[in-house]
Length: 575
Image (cartoon, rainbow, N blue to C red; front, side):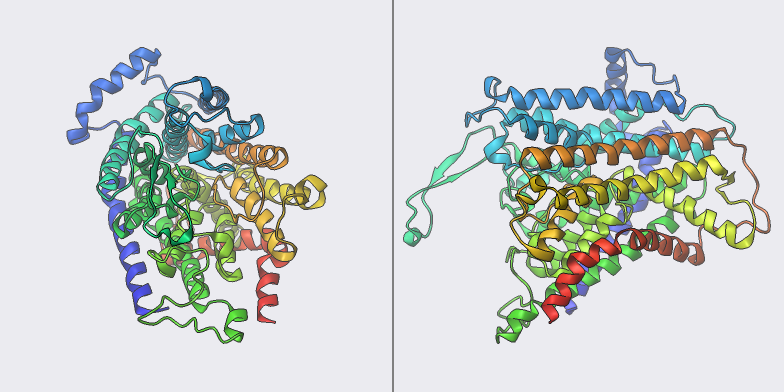
């Protein structure tokens, strides 16, 4: 680790943590329906939206009604996104005259964006019309993120309420998430990105003359489009779907060091601040800080592994006499698949944050990372996207692991587990366990099916351990609603489009429903005052226990599979 690496990582973590309290406090006011200062000017628009939709925001829902509303809303969005892709050739805002998207790709993309995964098996600029990018993908970037926040707020209310039968109103939580949080932040970020050179236009592609004609190419075609508006919400909403095929490595998506810093900060901004929102809404901010501390420690640990692995370079090249040491003249290390304008530090930082969150955007090729660098990114996925994670979904996933940690602590001291004044019974543990087990089930089963069938093996273009790593990463990404890829795997075909689509669907909704059931169960419970034997859940001891539970659950589940992929590849490289 160079001094430059420590400075850049320290600056990033400092700005991220300093942003948590003000933004988290503001979001708590949003969901407690308290005055919002200048943002109160949007109240008339909020009331108008309710009136148009025929919604009574004061009418609260039980967990089943809340889950039903979420599922209906998602189903309508899925059908709309699918239809728009299939009909884009006859719809407006298609200046490049792109044809309809294939049925299997449309199916995959519809589920991908509705579930906040944003896995893309296609090149955006050569596949999607501007209307599809805006009305289908960008809209889902907002509302799928808002749905994740809404489900988290419902769970927080379950902890905060006493003897209640309701957990809030899904529709009002959705509207407030979008109107007061996602939309204002996205507008500000999009304007800043445009100022940095990120494109925002309805013009079609342009033909230019290359600066260096020696390559034998007289002209070059550059794709354009309304990118900045999609880039802003893709990062803030932990979506990750790129307007262009190479995502945030493209200069029209990520033009300068400032745009790079703001985008990678935006990936974790809301997820980190929601920890403070949680503490405020349950009446004890120490609880939110404890969870944020656990997330930050895990992230920094994996980030150090990624940076040091990439900076160490490729041992096979070093044995051939290649000079890969960092110096004033070169970045050194493993620069394959990385933009020279970002270098190793910003590439590893982005890879770690995007896989810690359910974001999936990339500014470097993860497939070109060293085995240990790729292992760090893959294992961050396999922790369950709970180290910050997606907006809303990351924290409610972490709260499931908090419940498991409290349960284990209760077993060790021989008393009924309780958290935030709520005794945890068998039903609560079943819901938490179900939410935790769904992801590894769909990831491991999906990977096994892919590598054991002819259709799955047909488009694995890299043989051996690395090819297995690519398949495992793809299903880990889909199973954690992330969307990034190792590449090297041909995934835009009927087999992978269908298999990964089903995994994304299960990973989002089969976890969300147990979470909402848990919220309903907790809301009905009475508050139990803490006693002398109650485990403090805001100190260093509990943070350490929580970190251990997060790492242990992932290790017990995925280490055998990782041993067949990146671990074996690393040992082979050393040999």
